[in-house]
Length: 213
Image 1 (tube, rainbow, N blue to C red):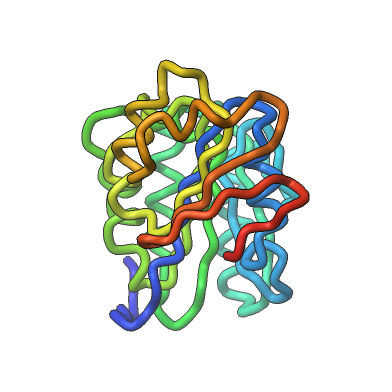
Image 2 (cartoon, rainbow, N blue to C red):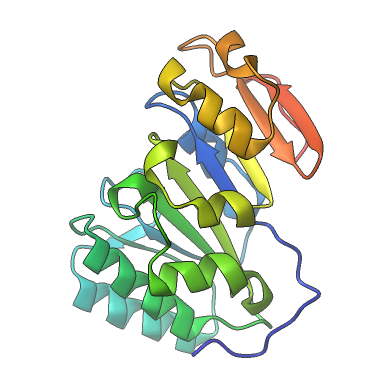
């Protein structure tokens, strides 16, 4: 059960959207929070795209995670199992049980559309998204298919990164992120251009032109 709620903690959740090769994983890998020394970090990443120590089974991850939390030291752990709703919910339940408002816990979710739906967020994933902030949880969720994920993360992520998407997704993402109509049509494939939105601030960047985080 999550402990030590702290209402003063900032919302640092980030939702990254873009087709494969758009630069979203690169952006997350190089985010200052992810690169921070002493970070406590876990990832649900079936395709092992992030630089963490992976467990190939839920039991193995459970043991490694519990031991790491008890140690009081920093860690970078990942779970690489079949991306099913059941496995993801078990992962989220474990993270929720370890959440502590006195200690940051960074959580990366690989391809969210594989394990979430466009309906209501599942129980423990929903808890992490809605109230995880005050228990020290910082979410980094990425997806290639934004219309297939729950709307809870759209409303609760304080930061949003949007790279190249197919036209099918443009109007939906522009509306739910708060971008101007037709703005996503100006991003071309393989350019690594993207929009970064934090509150009312919207920046445009590339891999070489960094946005202010």
